[in-house]
Image 1 (cartoon, rainbow, N blue to C red):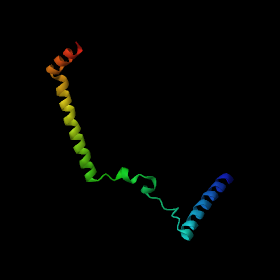
Image 2: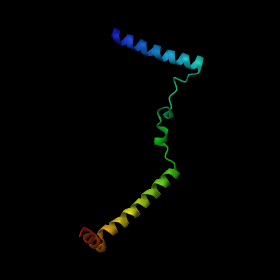
Image 3: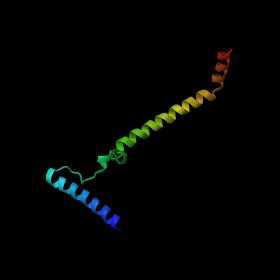
Image 4: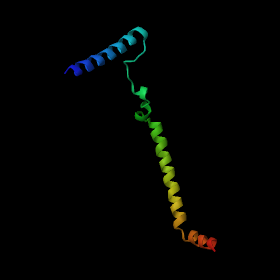
Amino acid sequence: MLEFIGLFSLILLIIGVGYLCDKKYGTNMMSVNSSDFGLGALFTDTAKQQSAKDDEIASLKERVAVLEKLVTDSQYDLKRQIDNL
């Protein structure tokens, strides 16, 4: 029980020092924002960014479709066989 009180007192002391530094020196030690951790960009996906992602996905799907046509085309297979000779 005595260890818990000592730990609790230490935590309160650290919080108190942080609070006093905030008030006296304006260090902003006690304020935490998502931008402090670099997480703001992860959670703010704007409509413009989403639109750009959707456009890129559509473009990639078109390219894959063209490549599938090329690979499954019988003329492509014939050309490959001739090149292998």
